[in-house]
Amino acid sequence: MKVPLLNLTRQYEIIKEEIEREVLGVLRSGWYILGPNVKAFEEESAKYCGAEFGIGLNSGTDALRIALKAVGVGPGTEVITSAFSYFATCEVISDLGAKVVFADIEPDTFNIDPDDIARKITPLTKAIIPIHLFGQLADMDRIKDIAGKIPVIEDACQAIGATGPSGKAGSIGDASAFSFFPSKNLGAAGDGGLLTTNSEDIFEAALSLRNHGTAGDRYRHESFGYNSRLDEIQAAVLRIKLRHLDEYNGKRRQNAEAYTTAFRDIEGIEPPTERDRYSHMYHQYTVRVFNGKRDKLFEALQAANIGCAIYYLIPLHKQPAYSGLYDSLNLPVADRASLEVLSLPIFPELCRDEIEYVIETITNNL
Image (cartoon, rainbow, N blue to C red):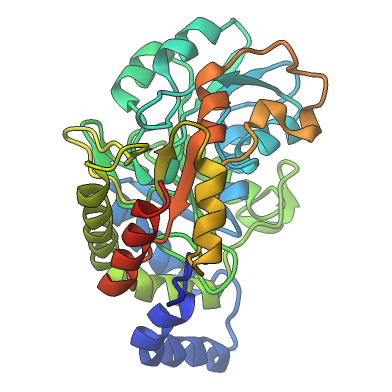
């Protein structure tokens, strides 16, 4: 048996008639940029997330970049974020000329540690980016209390649909960023992103920044912005998939429960934690493998034709791009996680016999 880490064609085959009809409709319309599908998707996705405003963008990376710029991040400022995530989160901070201040993570959720945020706030702190890693909300109540008046930007790129005591991903912070990279829970047929906010000021700034700093008049540029528009074809695809998103996320949760039930009694492996009053959307199903056996298990799964991945092999403060800048930084929980984490197939169309094969293979190799 061969079990892929992800198979996008299975989902496409189920909804291809809807997808092809709408994509052809866009092509026939001749309206490819900032048209009716983008406007409708912005409204529908903002409503889904519980936010007042939504702005379609070309990527989750630009959603983060534009949110940070909208709240005034730039040279001479600092932004606190997690050291355990994808590189884009810190990349945009550095790109804007600000200093990245890395915080450690919680050992059970892999999300940013609010206590470490509190230790690292300075008069230069201009924003805080908690990352809802793998599909579970960070502790937003505590983070917002600690932040006070400092803007909090949710990196919700992996967590659309996730909920917690504070609310739904995309509705809690001053602004939020989502990615629609094809592998995400809500994936486009290419790149795409979304910024949500309840602030009219951030909304207006983001609208301008996504389109070269224009403000109403396409030839009047109020600031230096970006070419970061979500296109009509991607918006059309995303509108269809948004209607199915709760179903997809529900299947992910069912698959996760099957794994978690099996792994609870297996020594040497720890299933992901889902905290009380939180609803984890399992963009990744990430376990810990103890006693230095992670790499051996990774190789065994590959040999058995089971897709798996290590998210993340190198913590952000140890990335070559930051060579020499954070050599003395001690983040033991993030460092340990990078040696133990392993992500397993979790996509909605995964079959029960495939899940059982993964469980059997892991059980036989620990």
